[in-house]
Image (cartoon, rainbow, N blue to C red; front, top):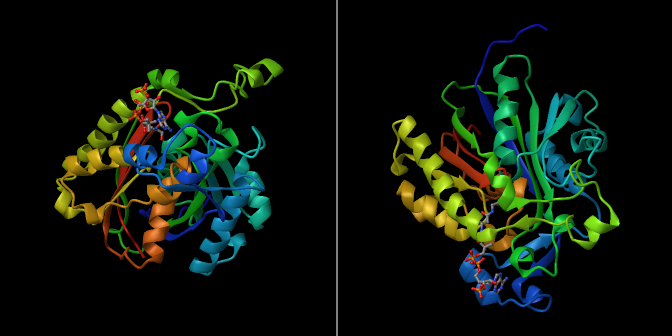
Length: 333
Ligand code: UT7
């Protein structure tokens, strides 16, 4: 394969899709023993979106169609599609291939990446490697999750937390060496499996009547245990990437945290000493959309005209696995 010049990878377009149906805390009050006040105080969530018809690929496709319009390119120009999701349409084929067909990205190859709530960041870094190798010029990275498909709406511990959404970014070689993805720090710790998982549906517990009766096809989370490590993990890794690059909170234009719980976001923002106006937060409207939270924030802020070329951003996530990490980038468009 002929090499083009090695370049930094930059996000050159962003878009998102959220389904129309809104599930509010007041709706949930009628479904399980909970209150709007409890949910808002403990999580910061007021409502979330639910995809009534279709699958994760359909939300990804809607986000991608908007992105192609924004960047004014055709689907045929896309070379790779990476889909981060914990709710693939099916266990196989890869959702990326379903997306490739539906958007008509005839010249692209693609694959899925499953790293739970860190899926988008892991996929973003993976996509960046293809650009930096010099061999690719247009890589789509999508985070899409239909969390409602694995949520038990009789379990008040979990059903209040999750929502459905998709977000997509395009990665291209940066025109300016100073703009784009600058650095990353990633971790994983497999001891987290015990506290956050979905037991059935995979090769360990193939679905049977018994696994369904036991509700093993739904998210299991020991919220309290995950909360403690998430607060420390996301704050630590965000602080670490600043220190590694000789930056302080004042040097950052936006902190873009995974949206799992407002209290986790607050703790990380406090540790960075970053002004609250510079923290992207939309958990109140969408809850935890897993792989979609970070591109959904980026897209909303970009649409509102608040993201500017040259802005310095720290993206950070923590999720099942455990998987966690941060990415430092300079916004390129
Ligand atoms: O994105 C992947 C990573 N995931 C996370 O980062 C999530 C981390 N965890 C959390 O965000 C929080 O732990 C939760 C929001 C899940 C729970 O908040 P908490 O402050 O840790 O509450 P808790 O689990 O300690 O529960 C406190 C009480 C319990 O009652 P008792 O035992 O004190 O009588 C729960 O049964 O609140 C009760 N409770 C509820 N009450 C009303 C639990 N869920 C609800 C509810 N409504 N929906």
